[in-house]
Image 1 (spheres, rainbow, N blue to C red):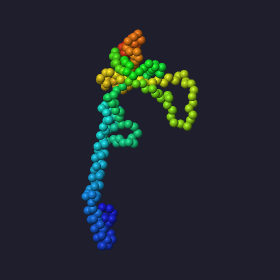
Image 2: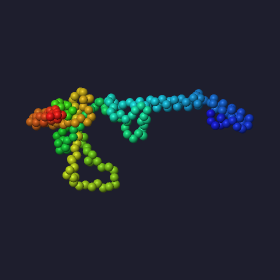
Image 3: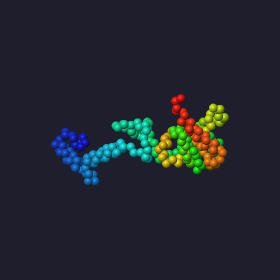
Length: 216
């Protein structure tokens, strides 16, 4: 009840009128439901909504690393940083960066061999999926300043492009994020003198990784 219903002062007639008004107000119904009951049920629905949202569901299968929350911590839209990093297991791919002139004959579907430092002595086969023909060097932020064009400093590295490579190995979980290595793209197939030299070079790199961790 509101303050009017709780007020006890005034004359006898006023008190009787207030009592009748309070009884009418208390017994009133909205669509067959008492307002007090409706208000409590609304609060219960809101509490259940908040409870349901305490469980975070990932959009894809994967694993969580760098978890920053614990039971009891509030994670909302105004949080400054992320609460965790989700590593998705499906649709893995590898990016190999090349100087722009080296991509003249690279096309999707060409065979690739990859040597990862994580697996010394092993060579993984794959295919070129696409070329990411974009580089942050060519990006200009909106500004009222006129761009200044001139020769790049001698120590500025040339902007490279990335080649997206899909590996043939069905066990994609063995290729973690951040793994490094080298890749050889065979633009004319895997036969011929140049292809043979590249095969020897990438295998030498992979086998030399056996020697690096040895404490001589």
